[in-house]
Length: 226
Image 1 (cartoon, rainbow, N blue to C red):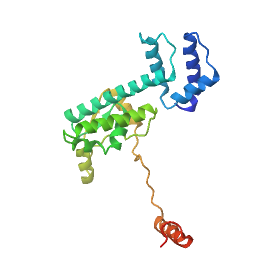
Image 2 (image 1 turned 60 degrees about the vertical axis):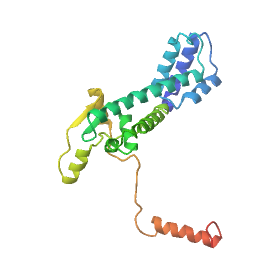
Image 3 (image 1 turned 120 degrees about the vertical axis):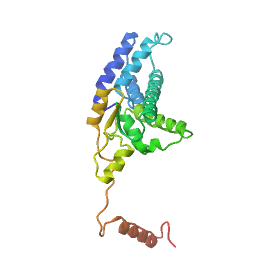
Image 4 (image 1 turned 45 degrees about the horizontal axis):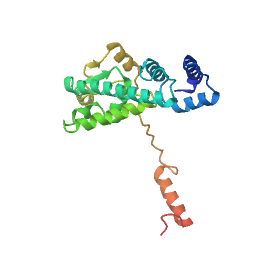
């Protein structure tokens, strides 16, 4: 959650507890916020709704641990659904074409794992480990409520080859809900996830700086002195 969600969150907790005939102290509200602030607000609302509707536990006022269990289950479910889309896309479309999923987080996780083309190079023996890594990365983002930047398009082998030859890219394949996939395309970025900047050559460049620090250590008798 963002700091702007603070008041909405507190109002929601107070409302849920009043449903159970309980009041909530400021201290208790702060405990709730600390426990759940790493999750997305809408996911928290959904978790409370599932708790209220649960025939086994819904008659009891929830504690933070109850909602966290709900949230972790939901992030696992969403990660499994996301992986099912990826698995089917690799098997039915392949990594030759450019693809756009209907979930930008899928794009980011695939980018972090080496890109769309790399998925096509994995063997069947490697596939279960690829699935587990994908699910863990996806769940990590979801559990923290992060919406990181992601590439607008996952580039396939054909476009990667054609771009070197100066040819236009291949036709895009939309995976999942078409409208959502188009929104993912509009919301993506061409910037790399890790910014790299070269220092200008001169007295302040990284090589000269490294030699300067090493010289200071030798003079002062610090670590690395002979």
